[in-house]
Length: 155
Image 1 (cartoon, rainbow, N blue to C red):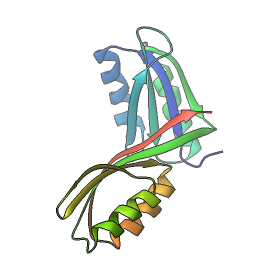
Image 2: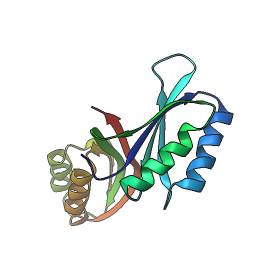
Image 3: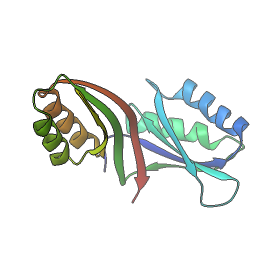
Image 4: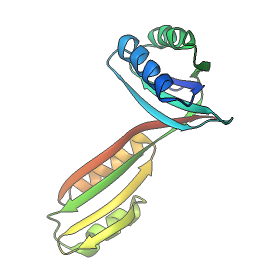
């Protein structure tokens, strides 16, 4: 079982339904929540993946509140899931470009742009691997990142 509570919600693909979900999460999700939306299994539905903070008990209380919404088809706490994080990064102030490019390749980053004194790349992986890769890249120069947050899918 994964330590981070993930709530998977199948609901109507309507702006009002999305807003109602956001309101429930704002009131019930301790410390906030990260929400990702994807097309649902059926037309007119969307799958919301919600990364919660707190205990399993708190997550279950949040799930029960979400499940009461009229627009919700199902709300499930995921026990087994695969999670990933996407990062777009900019590396500047590095000494040797070849060394920086080789380090990006080692961590599986995809090069988006390389100009004089600046490299922009994309990296997606499990959060702990992303963090380890970023730690290694920080040693090469100034690192600026933009992160998606955790997204997850049941397995």
